[in-house]
Length: 610
Ligand code: X8Z
Ligand code: ZN
Image (cartoon, rainbow, N blue to C red; front, side):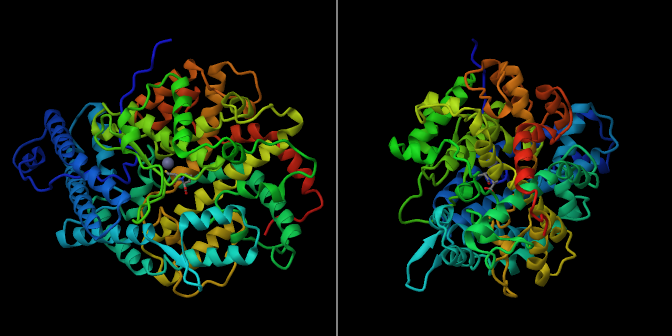
């Protein structure tokens, strides 16, 4: 079987800055004043943009890497400098691109010009003082998050990683509440600079021709910005009945475990009891909500501990999965330069990310890996980014990205859906494959991770879009956050929030300005991709037992889509791999069908809703 040919790219286009030196007044667009522009001018303009980006993007990525893995005063300054250079360059070209609006150009040139216009997340205004301030705020907020810790009354201080680890297993409601509250002290001082950032970024967005930053964020999906929220509502509508059934069951079981005074049966679930700092995925409380009937559900965390797995072994196993699909091995430098563990004695950005620093072969991940099944999935998630980056590395810079933001987040997760009992047996992590009588347990575990996440994945940007529109006063930021948490997730703060709280800032993607809709989409897409690849692999198993491991056919189909980058509208990429152009949550219904029946039985005499 022939090896799939891969290239590389940059994962976190969000994270690694791509910069360039801004002001060269001889760009072809300046011809507009004096002569009529033509298609050749448009191409020359794009080539010039490409050349300038090429020059700055690798040093900017190295600065961003140095900062993320050594957070200190100096690296923060350097990365802010590069971020400013890159975003100012992008903004300059994005504004100039409009000069070709009425020029007749080929479809490919038109697509690149349109992508360029909406390529920024946080747009710097032309005023250089404001652009500088915007970059400084960005690095200040990410430093606050990365260096954040909670110090207990006895003087011991805990990092987010330490608190998260304990919150995944502790069943002590007081301790859980203390950590939940403690971590949210870190974000309080962010509110004022976040507010300032919204104001400056909106000036920048207006200069690019958008009403505000919210519109800029919604303009990246190959459809009118105003239609995109409707598309999300449609998808959420497909999942909502299933989520509500899950929420109802989980609340009832938590109430039984902790008592009705802690978990009342007619109210949203207190957010500290769901096994995760943000109540975003709930797999860690499987033991509380599992079926009464004994079920054999593989415990990957336990199996890895028993077999003495370390971080490197986990990454190698994940790489092997991709290799089994036909992807080329990762380069040696991946292992030499990646960060797998939280280092002693310095602050780092532990939030997992994947990078391609030179848009060639310099692929890396940055994680503070815990030896757990949950983190084994995250490693696959990150490698999915790396293989995507590598697949589109040779495309024009504006096409180096995923079909839409959700695609980038879905690839590794799609592969991780193939970590089935059969696959785990192959790894030697379990001895026997549980029979079908254990399916409800296995499906419930996956639903706690994936379905519980979906409304969280949606509400973060429902909050952000409103805030980025600039009409919400900062005193209302936190109130709006909890209104949306309650509306979508049926989850509530466990304690009254103080007037100065800024709880959105306690979630990495808010201070880091990484859009979050990507994860909502990814949680729908990954099931569609999984089904398509299982069909291609010729699997006859039910979807939740299908593993595409070893299928070169599935690998080729996947790679064909990855190699398209964003060169075509996402609907086409979707069609290429799944045979249909739409995002569609009905695959989720199919995947979890037996669990929905079981949940409805469990909930039969319960009053659901909040
Ligand atoms: O941020 C991530 C990845 C890096 S892109 C680890 N995720 C979201 C989160 O942690 O909040 C993956 C799932 C959702
Ligand atoms: Zn990701």
